[in-house]
Amino acid sequence: MKPPSKHRWPPLITHAEVPWYIRARNGFLTLLAWLTMAYMLRLAIVVLWDYLSHPIFELTHAKEHNWALAWQRLSLFVYAILALVIWITVWGVKRRKVLRRNFDPRVTPSLPLEEHAASLGLDPREVERWRQWRSVTVQFEGHRIVGARPGGPKETQQ
Image (tube, rainbow, N blue to C red):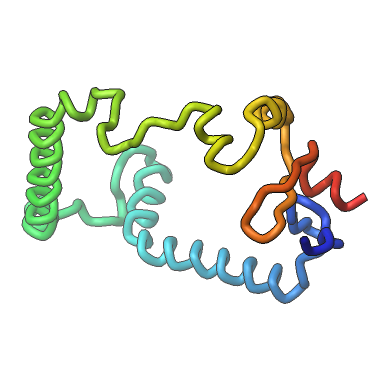
């Protein structure tokens, strides 16, 4: 059995432990993402600004949008999404009995405690006691379980 780790458990990275260049990289990438989104929405932002500026709720500088051209460009995408929604709905309705079933026939039933403990060469009462503990540290010799004690990584560091 290897000795317990010197690191805290669970392995959390706090703000103080993050190097400055990682924080700078994250800030740069976040700013770049926001600027990219603003650039992609620049026409919508201009129209919204014009619509909400004086005189309010009127377009004074921006031209009215050509909805026929927008529909021509987006119609294939909308039809593809509609076809996928219909396909998923039909598939779900046809398989609703299978989807509602709580029992999965592919899952094998669990072994009774006595049979499972016997297959590992353990006392079933001892395994039942181990199940009552919140966490268990198990000791092995080769591929055999030789013992267990309550506790997890926090308790083994002390």
